[in-house]
Image (cartoon, rainbow, N blue to C red):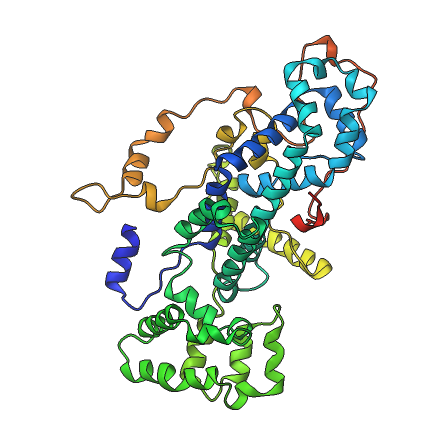
Length: 462
């Protein structure tokens, strides 16, 4: 990108790191667009759209699922797809019983083409096998997304190592048959290249003893060692003496576990939950130059989503309705709201020892599961900077910047009707058909939220 080039020209010792959350979402977007996965997701959407589009089908579904919804809104469209497929699989038996129950057949809308398709989908064995495969393929990346987008621990020390692990698990999901996983791995490798495999990411992977002490072959990997040296050159740029010591002296002490590195207490690094930066502060005193570099790198986050959440707080308050707020009062409101969110998150972490970052409190990113065309209305597509930020010839301005300046995207933005407004889980569409009248009564629905456990794909049988 142009900004990256300009910044590195002025400050050659600076590191440029792509947002891990955004890159992983690009991977999920690309994999979800493959025909075999898109077909399964579209079938699931067709079923949920039919169920949530009619009062009686919705009430019938909730009676069989013990008043729980099958749509689980996520923070992104792709997280929503995974969570909803997971929810469908979790409630598979209940949904199968529903579509063969006389109450389901008595609903007039079930006799329509879409109703018959919805019934067939729930009874289709290939559909459920495809859902199981989708979950097995998506789960490693979704688990990594949770780690990277979370605010509990720095993600830089674990991003590259967990991405390698995710790639292995994806291959295993396809039985390690190359022709089956080739297209999926091509997408992962393409998005990973020059983004999540930079010298900074690889150096953090090498300096994290959880990985390097567990697998000593990492020290002999020429690609890893070369990128580690490149990271040292950038980190200590302009100081050849300091650049020499961490590579030629300190690194060997770390690799061969000399001094404090070899102490029995240093085995705390065998636990995934340990803090590698704190480990280096404690055991790296005899390798001070490398210790300084390691603690700096291993304390880094790997995502800009925290900043985006801050910006969203500002945008939420700075609406046209409140545009007359003074700058001072506006800043105070943003400060209070954002810190209230942090306090709420801290309380959840202290009470549960975990914090689910994928679940959302609203259904904005789940519109594609409510009605046809909902994904386009939600405007949640992720942009790939390598594909839409080419420079205008003769300038350093990108085509995207030029388009935003002239309002090109706004020109084609459709005006939303009331029907296409984002829907919530507890909101039902209004229908004039008399066929909607029935004996079902409105009940208090217990929606699934952050308190519910998110299960892994291995929890389900094909």
